[in-house]
Length: 166
Image 1: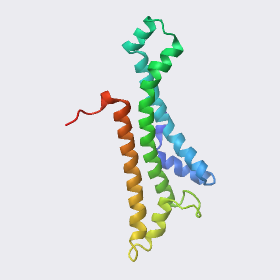
Image 2 (image 1 turned 180 degrees about the vertical axis):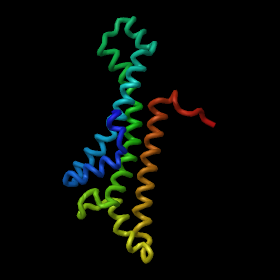
Image 3 (image 1 turned 135 degrees about the vertical axis):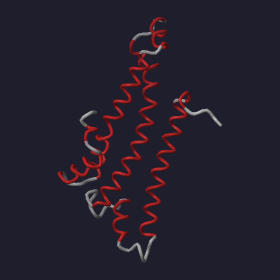
Image 4 (image 1 turned 45 degrees about the vertical axis):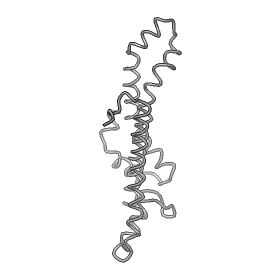
C-alpha cells in the first residue's frame, strides 16, 4: 500500500493507458487496483481493532471458536468501513475516468464517456454551452450521489460513529 500511494492514481492510470491498449476492462481493473490497497489497509486496521475488542474476549470466554468469532464479530466491524470506502472509491474512479477521457488517454473514441463528451463539446461551447454543461452536471450529480450513498451507508452500518442529530 505504501508503494501504491507513492504515485498519484491519475498519473499511474495515465501511464497504464499509454502503455496498454485502452479498454473498459483494463481501465476498470487499473483504477480498482489503484484504490484496493487503501481499502485493504482500512479493513486490516478495523479487523485488528475488532479482534482486540472486549466482546471478542467475551465470546472466546463463552466457548466460541475462531471461525465463529471471526464471522460473528470481526467481519461485521471490518466490512462496514470497507463498503463505505468502496463507495467513496467509486467517486474517485468516476472522476479519474472523466479526466483520462478528457485528456484523450481514456477509452477509445466510439465509446461515449463523460470526459469525452466534455472534450468534444469544449470547441462548440460558445455556440452551444449545453454540450459542456450537461456532461459536467452529470459528473457532479454522479459524484455527489456516490458521496451521499457512502455517507448514508456509514451512518446505517456504524451508527456509533455518526454525528448526533441537531
